[in-house]
Length: 562
Image 1: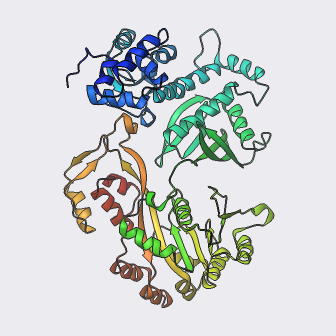
Image 2: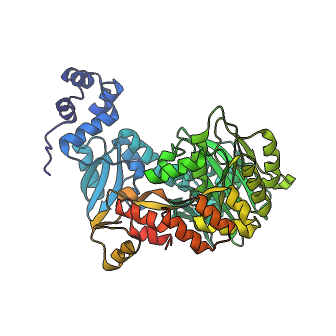
Image 3: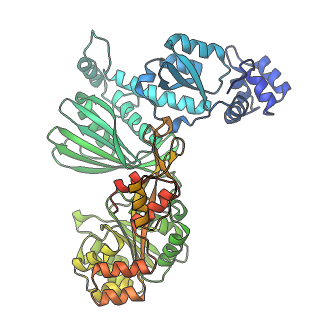
């Protein structure tokens, strides 16, 4: 689409009704030396950064992007230095052949665009982003590289990285000095994790380097490889922050960090592990500012939501959420507690450890070191007159027995269990040593779940399913004409997926299921009855998400549901 390159920013803002002619003239007259008209208009309060970008997008048909969601290749950063992009207020984000893509909040600043062309020798394509997002991206990407250079990485040839590193370490005598290169490196690692929405940070030693890896949307990928010489100091800094023993490198340790990153409260659970190549550290990132605790955000459809609401609002009984590690079980339990939390209800949880602190709920950490186990904690909790009890996990016979007893004495018990499907949970409880009749009389329902990645809506393409794919859908009774394919673009980091949702298999233990459990019916017989009663299996729930265009068949098959 042709663009009117004769326009100026003030003209566009006036035409779009964002500012008046008087305000433009006043900003031009009073702006500081070297200040752009857009910056002056924002400073005087005549418009906002976002209003400028919106007006330019409508007038010039230039695409607007959210830089925080983009994957920016390190190679493009080498084409323009930090001093130039900071002064120009731009951010290089991608390279396409002989074309560099640059984010700016003023695509009509032709001198800057021409300067980029001369510096890079490439044609310039502009996309729109707010000034604040551009500044954050510059800090995130260029700041990381600057921190590495201060540690002696990528230094000049006349000084070895090791020499400069040890000079820094000799000067780094104060652990509370926020200018310390190691502290800056840890801060940058955490900032990147929060910006990319990572759930876990892995620091993995190899023979001569160590990896920094982030788990994003359930998939682990290497972000950087750094010289191993800085690993001990990095691990020590993490241990100091999480109140671990920095002198003990021979045994695993656990710790916790509560911090604020860019105004967002972040809870980090730290675990270190000694390996033959050095200490490994994993940091679980819990962004407490995210609005992800409500049932509306879990991915339940209307039918599933109705059954789930019915299960968790019963006066008593055991409701279990099942699935492998990392399938979102705890998130589902917290969403249920958030729904149930009222002044007239006494809710007590026992967890290992408490992941998210909820206002108005009594949360208890188990401590095996002093023999304060799930089972022992539950015995004490039952004397606290609870209406609802949440157990972090049922992992042994003793805990299961107390949970069943609590349900039979008028309590609602919510917990998780590691099984692959809802019906297999029944077998698991019996295998733990719980009598069939006790399972039948106490269990209200089981929610099995998995997390699947959402296909990126910016780059996904619709195609006709193949013959084999049609057979899979037909076998599960799903009629489909088109499927979405993941492609990959800057917004999803070339992965084809962005974000995750859950798929559910909900077993409502009705009278017929109770009878079958009591009569020791085989697992497959209970499964057949559950399907007759309307229970959708995980595979069917996943295929329904494919039919709606939310994910892909490849993603459903990746988690091996069939």
